[in-house]
Amino acid sequence: RPMLLLETDYTRQSSGQIRTRIEAFLESLTPDIPQPKKTGKGDKTMYVMGIDSGSTSTNAVIMDQDRKIRAFSVVRTGAKSGVSAQKALEEVLEKAGLSREDISWIVSTGYGRVSIDFADENVTEISCHGKGAHYFNPKIRTILDIGGQDSKAIHLNEKGEVKDFVMNDKCAAGTGRFLEMIARTLEVSLDELGAIALTSTEKIEITSMCSVFAESEVISLIANNKEKADIAEGVCHAIANKAFGLLRRVGMESDFMMTGGVAKNPGVVRAVEEKIGASLYICEEPEIVGAAGAALYALEKCGFCSGTGRERF
Image (cartoon, rainbow, N blue to C red; front, side):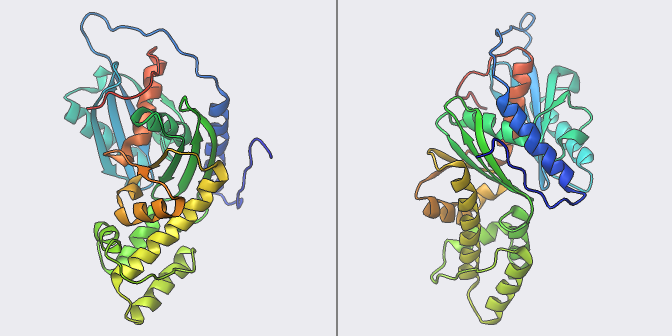
């Protein structure tokens, strides 16, 4: 088996995807060398920030030197990732009652990480999700992250280090965008889509996992007077099947964690749990796991050991 396998369709947009894979692989080879813990000057608390620029949301976390999350923000990513990042920055600073000058180090992550000009450093979302997951629950060994434009499966060791990962960013099927499209077709909100899936009484199989063909299939089911709840449940199971394929490629080691905005969809969560035959750990705010991991990288940069476990909120 090769140490790193890259699959690409060689489009102009594929360069960023390839870069993420290579950088994440190199980060996994870098030894985690603990640094001596530093203390602030006098009684002044040190603060760092992690910011995750995703395709759907931009999330920021402020963490203090004791690894406690002081504030977080989740804003919608607009047409320009840099503008959304600035908005997330301003919002999280306001929530924390801090100014930009109070932040000692900022690490950016996510697909738009390189476009955040106020960040001091950037780290791939693969590494940040691994570190963030270990922070929220040190028992986690396998992560399923389903975001707006891609999905990832990440395998961790007992230290929270990334041992293997697989990404699917070639097709929108099985992502948050796919769910948004189906919700519009069913004329329900995204929140309603997950809720009504839990009330399904008839099993419906969505046979196509191409987002375009799946939408056509849903339209046909509507024309055949199938219930929205049953269609929604079928869509959730189609996503679970796609996620299961990713998880198998990195190894099905428990405990399992699901991150990303889709982790807030109870229909998808139940479908994935049924498919893998195990429960998923989901933190209170699954969208901020990557940003929390980035903040932990910032703490290490400032000389604070990574430690284990969490001290949140």
